[in-house]
Length: 196
Image 1 (cartoon, helix red, strand yellow):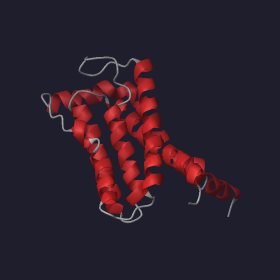
Image 2: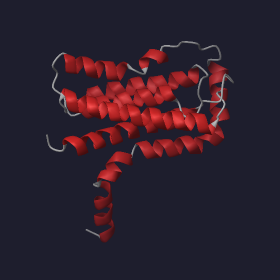
Image 3: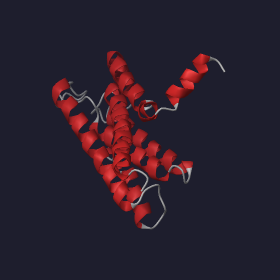
Image 4: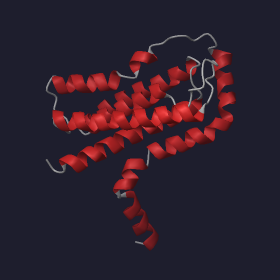
C-alpha cells in the first residue's frame, strides 16, 4: 500500500474523524448554502405556500421517546441505563448550549419574519441528536432502528422549511450540530465509564 493510503486509513480510523465526519460537513454545508437560501424558499412558496402543520413540534422528540420505550421494555441496547442517561444528558447540554449561543449571536431573520433566531434550527438539532442517540444505542441490533430515526429527523427538518420557520441552511447546520453533539456526549460518557 502507498503511504497516502496508509495515511488516509490512519486518519479515517482516528476517534476525532469518527466523531466529526458527518456533523462537521453538514454544518459547513449549512454555512455554504446560506447564499442560496432564497432560491430554495421560492420552491416552498411556489408549491406549498399555505403549509401550516406543526407536527414537527412533537416529531423532533420521537426518536428519543422510542429509544427510551425500547429500553423500558427491556430491549437490550449498547449501554446500561446509567451510562445511556449520562451520554444523553451530555448530548442535550452540548446541543442546547451551541444552538442557543449561535441563535442569539448570529441574528438571522426567519423566513416568516417573526424574529431573528433562525440559524440554526433547534427543532432539527434536537431531532438529529435524538436520532443519533437511537443509532448509538440500537443501530448495531438492526439498521432499521437507525433508518427510521434518521427518517423522522429528516422529516422534522423538512417540516421546518415547509412551515416557513427555517431556511435550508438552518436545517443543515441544525442536523450537523445535533449529530456532533451526540458524538461528543457519548465520547465524554465513554471517558467517564471507560470499559465498564
